[in-house]
Image 1: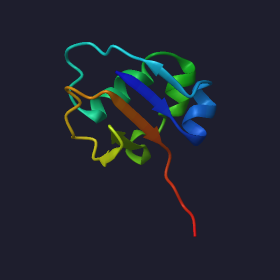
Image 2: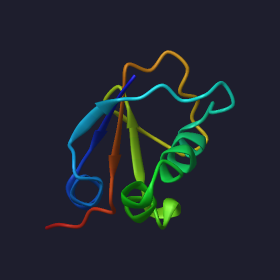
Image 3: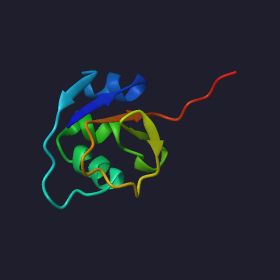
Image 4: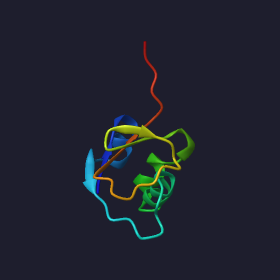
Length: 83
């Protein structure tokens, strides 16, 4: 599946997207965030507060308990503000 990173998540990881192959135990969006955080220092920094990371599966925002099976693209966003 393709992982896409936006804003500060992208800046901290140092890339806008990549193809990832999480292990079988990673079944939810939250599991994926935790797994990514374990990939190294830049990922740990990007996901240092996983509760605030927003996730979209195939361009639909989801909660962290959403299943990722069959997803083609999973995007990660920091909290968004605006006006």
